[in-house]
Image: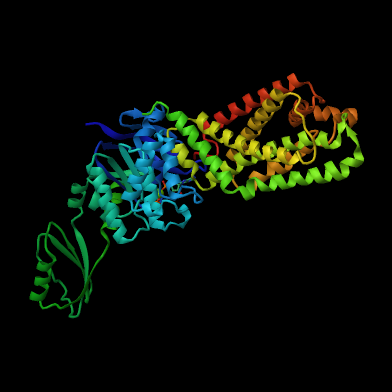
Length: 307
Length: 257
Ligand SMILES: Nc1ncnc2c1ncn2[C@@H]1O[C@H](COP(=O)(O)OP(=O)(O)OP(=O)(O)O)[C@@H](O)[C@H]1O
Ligand SMILES: [Mg+2]
């Protein structure tokens, strides 16, 4: 199987001395839908910047479909399209001109460029806006315009830097559908995100990056299996007797005070079984909440194991 | 992918540049026409009639070539520096940097864009000048070549300015503090024959002096400089500036972090 991207020991130290990438290695198979997940400042955009040549790397190597981006500048660039995190088209130009200009940069003859321009503007719901100046678009439309622009030369690899940040739920769903469709038709997709749910919905493989290091690189399925332990905080109306225990294999608890208890549930155990034991012991539960969101939990466990 | 990719990319950049300055024609084409029209009225007509002759010609005839050249220089420079800097400022330059367009095509596209504006304004000014003076071009070849080469030189210079610029101030500093003095002291308004030896020598170090005078030679048939030498200087400038631009683009100065 060919690799769409192969990154080896990539390091980047910015001019101010900041080490944004500390030697990361990453491989993405052709046809994959790959997530690069990480908190703010982790180095996601820097990594994409290096692939797309906007950031000069300090050391390491990047290959796109088996070709080095330094020595095969021309071929590698034809093979990918990038949707950046921030708006980077001219705000004074018309929607159609922006896409047509991009097509020109990739050498598409005018006729073909016009067809593709219409095709992708329609797909992304922007065809009605084609003659508007881009600054009049809403935030979500601007993002879709950047997706249309990245697709006009029909690259084999599409890289999206937080495509759904600041996009409403409905639009996010339709973007997810669109990306899945593109991926099903054979385009390799790499996207960065802050949302585990997004990666979970879309991606088959995932790398987690934090502070310039890859802390996990695995399949989505494996990761979710690891993740199935949940911590709940239960507030009770009745007092919790000291020494109270659930005596269940997949649940442990910690008494915070006489009206509050933390229960960790794992291994597919249903929270209902926990509740049943509580009512058996005559403890009334007033409220329940998740202690951490799953992403936070995931990061904590990954970072702990990396320290 | 496509055999004529480079040509298509080049044409795309040029189209985009021309579209930009024609879209904002009120800022790009009209002001220089008005300013230089005023020069014709004030210096050529009103003051000029008192000056009499300059370098063997009516004062009006003398300054027309200089003012056309001034328009070409300022507008070529200004088009490239504003356009390229604004692409940097809005990050739309990333569209080009991420795409497979070679550096020399990017550069050539912007230069031809600068030339298009320089020549457009130059033409407008020439048409206006016809209301004030009867010009008979003495040597068409020299006139056209020197205008084209000068326009290339200042488009390149504007490009370098834009690469190094980090703010809108940075794109007005050079035109104000370097370009304007060089133009005004470059023999647009007077013949160096009037100057004392020291200032004559200083003028000889000003490249614009050669361009203006060669252009004047093309139109009027007489000038303060050796035309061959002037063409040589122009070519040297083009080679040096073009090479520097390519070097800076390759290094990513002001563009890649
Ligand atoms: N030009 C620069 N000069 C200096 N430091 C930089 C530069 N660009 C980014 N950094 C730093 O590098 C680190 C990684 O930045 P990067 O943009 O790659 O993060 P990210 O993972 O994309 O974050 P986010 O999710 O917020 O977009 C950050 O600490 C950032 O401050
Ligand atoms: Mg980012």
